[in-house]
Length: 159
Image (cartoon, rainbow, N blue to C red; front, side):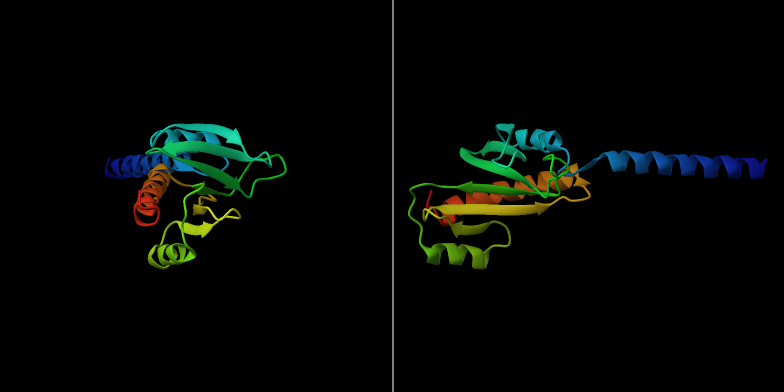
């Protein structure tokens, strides 16, 4: 009877481990599933899925009144199976000096700032999600992007 109970206990533990493993694998989000990322983006404001000029997926969103894009990179020739994403935004017609941009970049870990070809301030944040990250991890990246946007608007754009 003891051997039987040990065997049953072992099988139950093994089955539980397999169930958790399968559940965890399905909880991963990567850039091959733009709709999953879109659903997360919608939790932070309005968002729609479209394509960029190369035909790769692109999410157009708005957080706290600021328009931004999520660009997909490392996509195959069919514009699918992408590797990573990049949050990006810019503000037209707002004067910002290179000194302000350099100060921002020197102080911040997230959100690379630069002046685009028109001299407008731009902000980007790349997120490596190749091979998948948990939904909570990607939500945290959206939280960081929200903080980066607010900080940049306050510290650099004086808004």
